[in-house]
Length: 164
Image 1 (cartoon, helix red, strand yellow):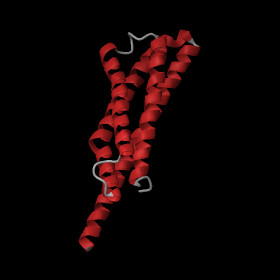
Image 2 (cartoon, helix red, strand yellow; image 1 turned 60 degrees about the vertical axis):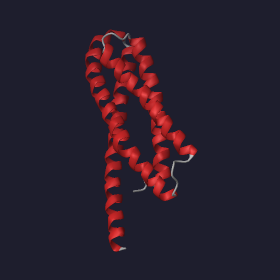
Image 3 (cartoon, helix red, strand yellow; image 1 turned 90 degrees about the vertical axis):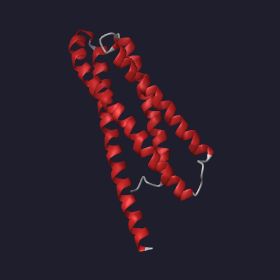
Image 4 (tube, rainbow, N blue to C red; image 1 turned 90 degrees about the horizontal axis):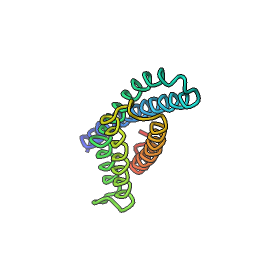
């Protein structure tokens, strides 16, 4: 019995560290997205600064895309699986209930949309996008990020790991 309690505490601590690291990555991703958006808004307001903005934006865009792919990978390969396992253990339900299954499916669809941005960036790069196209892409990207974070928060809430 004592061994089981100790094992559970170690697993909880490991999950807590994993979640904290993942949430820190989320904050970094949001900071980078905000910087891209602010840079883009500045270019829209002052078109004469576009050359300077493009050079800085290329650097920020590269950092953002790398951070986005890292965040999505870590979520899919580590975090989601552990959260779902935690929910299954708490609820004693296998397979997942319909609501949770729909949440996981929606996370997958949002991830696909976000990875399309990565593919677009890898294929065309920032130089080939007009300012209007870039603004539209950032807007859609922001919506998908917001949806993803909301779905992830549902998983966190359901797993009761949000207060670890």
